[in-house]
Length: 250
Image 1 (cartoon, one colour):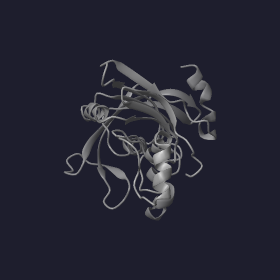
Image 2: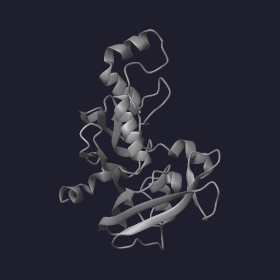
Image 3: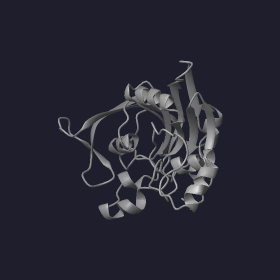
Image 4: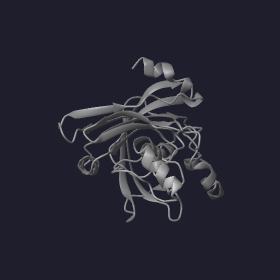
């Protein structure tokens, strides 16, 4: 995704950086591949980055940058990074203890014959990593390799057979919202990884932008102990255009 030249920094305070990640960009990647980490390092440590390239060094230059939080490559929205070890530890602890409140919005389209519940709903599923593949699956309870995934949500707006959902994941499993939406008959628009694609298609489709956006994240500031909320506006892309008015009225 070489057209991404700069990451929007929403704010930086007490060692916490809130940034807006575009869809299609990985959170981290090996040296030479653009990612949120490499672009933030380039923005914060420009001189050191240019020196590393000139000298042929194959590692990210600059000072401390903690990555306690990640988003899937195909997902857009707000992310939390840390510019100090203390902030990284504090944020990691909050994530581990499920003290951080995350809000996502997703555009979903029910499969033929499926419908979505009007009003609040809870998704509770057992999911596990698919061996040798970059995806997860929902399995029967009792699988020794499975972990509980729980998400609360509700419908914000409906337009014919397409719905805009607000989702609050209460656990932090790989691809949790994506696989749960598909399992409950309302796959996320554009998410062919959890649609009808065959295994041969996975490497091609897994990084395409999908209609899932991390809208806000609430954490406790590591210095002030006050609650802070970071928000990222929905992407300015055709995928979200028809829903823009819904966000203006919130």
